[in-house]
Image (cartoon, rainbow, N blue to C red):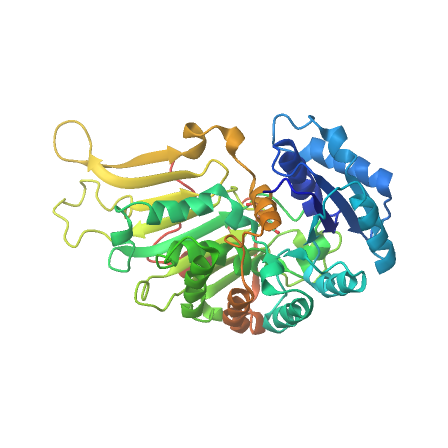
Length: 469
Ligand code: BG6
């Protein structure tokens, strides 16, 4: 059970992710009783001490917690926070961890959470070893895991020198979203859809995650990352795997991982001609961004899964910053009937093929669009839809945020929703042609849907977004 004493050593404790998600998430786990005997040792290069870190955590929680009873227990939680600067050396780190753990009556579990950019990960791993904190502990690695195949291999090798694979949790928070697991429930708990989940019936799939957000205070991170590494090689490909995988033999982590990795193995290398890269106008003028920066803030691509189920079915992926709308959808377009008996003008085809749409937003909506008869004389068709939204049937209270769920799983040692060394290395491998030879970045207007070339990429089909109103 998760109520065993637990120490969380949080590297990057004063960063953007800690502020927005991790500290508010830890408080919510604490409040909901899932993680009540906990101490958190924050560490970062910023100039903080315990008092100012506690203050930082309180402010982060007040600003970003999405839970209604957020103020509850903040004081009790704050007492469980510690801080040590990450340049203070391994002895100082160990001492603070021991101090934090001194009140525990049982040997605690330790979870190291590396919320640090890829280039800092190696030195943190070294620090854990030097401080003697690696044994009997678990380690959560934030994404992106490395920046290419060589660096991911190096990072895996360094991790494997100190940790067993069973101790390593490579996090991808999209997999912690309720809606992601719902894809598996939808596909494998029902007899209705799985038989048509196939190239014979599916024309293409879109995974579309436009954001209205810019890069906020993350220019440094973003300049060395870009949209592909930040979103595609991680979140979008993981979601693609859930959408495309074969039925696993069970819901055990090994079985799910095996099927996901088979999808990654079947993916063809990303070809430069199938990619549109973009950069929003004004990006180069932002503080911390190089005046000639070629970093993409937008990317759209076509990828292929070359196996029996999906041969010939393109998967279109898109994501970017400062776009017209914030959405996170998977949209499956079904093939049209082999022969239409409805004459032109009856409304058929006007609205494109039937779609099944998963919304990965917190509401976890799902909808199925199809043609039906318009009431009245004659025989005209309308596009109708059936919809379901999770929060309408379940109390929102029961819902854990993606990060909360994944931290809880890692503390308990459940690997189901984490990624593996093999899977990640394969994804970097298929990415290499694009990383070696990226197409030029094309400017786009903030508030648009990206550069114009996105339409050619998907033609003769069309992007599902924006939805017709
Ligand atoms: C993060 C990326 O992993 O995911 C961010 O680094 C992005 O750039 C975020 O904004 C999106 O996550 P969510 O949960 O808001 O869809």
